[in-house]
Image 1 (tube, rainbow, N blue to C red):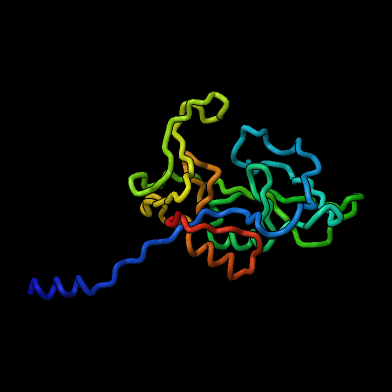
Image 2 (cartoon, rainbow, N blue to C red):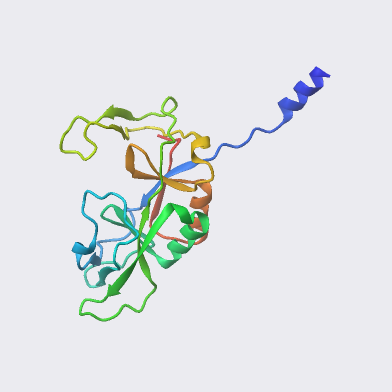
Length: 211
């Protein structure tokens, strides 16, 4: 009987491990940007890393004579500028992970932009989920007083590095920022696939398990 149980256990398929990706704008696509924040004073101070939900509507100018209009995900200081379509995907997959602030888009001479809505977006969920023993990266204590995180633990990418996560610490989250390296946004396979299925452009995904 014990032998039968052993054979049954050996044949039972292993649970597939979730795949995770470093996610952000793909700077290999498109030319120079033809868009900018008209009044930067409404944005939070530089030292505020996460975007408050109370941020006022962000005034943007789109000028195609200066360069390309934004794709579905662009960098905006510490945050992202995203299209309506990107927002719909994010809200459907993991609404609690984000803060969205509407943008008031104008043309160069003050005319209204008649295209789709755009949003300033931030991934506000931060998880301490890295399996340090299985990952390849720099782990240290910041000793440079010029950094905001002076005296604190930090992570840093290395060439041919690898990030392995403790799935129990992630739970049902589809996307999060890494504790100790908050500029790095991690998403899972389901969110990546949803972005691809929606045809979203200029989003970069790097498999965390590969150097």
